[in-house]
Length: 540
Image (cartoon, rainbow, N blue to C red; front, top):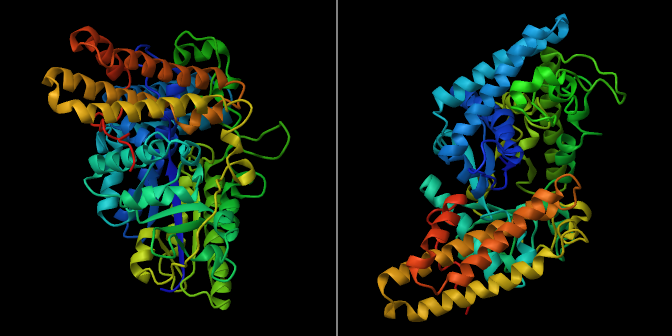
């Protein structure tokens, strides 16, 4: 096959685990993604494999997401979230006196029964293993990401910080999947040339940038532009694929893309906003704050506020139509590229995974129909970036050095470096420099220390590294630009920095005096349990 298309999904939720409270609104970010995206996506992908439909897909599972999916407490709370939502659907069916509404909430109750069975019984609440099975059968290329989704170019003032994010992400992948990742999703698709040595040294073979990150580079116009991978270091380094704007917008855009079709489910009408408060009492568990429940009973309809009831069968037909349209569009796009004498062109379409199911409810059904529509075609194939490099032997990699870029507003880094969030970076950089000094000092004196003190200091450095990485998450800087989410994002950043400082103050102390505080911090955020204390080893 000479023409290729790669779908790449980025699944990420920031580390949010509040064991100290029975229910936390921000934990719902994970539970919504599990119920509305990961379970439906797994259902579709396993069904395609079971039906013998040929397909290939690339999926990034971020290290913080992997940590939460593997966490016992979060698995229990996800199961409780699914059951709470199912009970709400059942109670709404009993309360309703509208036949159309009753039919829909009963449909939701049946759907939730099925998804609950998949989660509890088929996959035993282990979604990482369910994804790993698809990797092992050769259908799914799973790649890694920065450990806590830190915006790597903005960490380069202290290069060890960017390197640590990359190395910890690779290490977490190896622990989860027992293999080395071939690809690396750059958080926010944020790229800077100085990152490529760290990626190469970590054994990464390929990554992905926004289209303008390659088309704006020198020499790009002389080659295949965004439709061949760029090769750093004169073509000898890692391969950098471009996220195709045309195909991505076709799916991503709510205005001009598929999700805006009037037959699809309306995201912003929700039972949690429409139902009487007394009907929501059990679901809200005493809270007086309305919230999304995932039970949405209207379709997009049009731009006005009057919405028709959702029709699942009508929406499924729309998804099938759009799947065929996407396949035919890629076939035409790739044929046009080959007519320009671009050999083995590849179109890479990349999206947040949560678009499929959470934001665009019919997204998983679209993927199901897309791979079925593409099965047996002889003009192009769906592949993965890793498989593409294998099949071409790297012959299409062009000696182009991509330029700094991201998929954020404006195409660069201003979303994460703005009036609302720029204050965080001096704090992050200073503590990164402190960690480098701590690692260096301990390395020099380790052999002279009693083992209990040496172990205390290794643990303290590892936990300081953990707290700093959690503060570096790009999610917090992004959410600081959102008025409603700003207080939580600010508090999370400040809390992690404060814990870092608390540990710094007891780093050199007697372990008996500081052990309780260290153990408390470790238990609060049990992410990356085997994190190396030497991640911030000085360079050079």
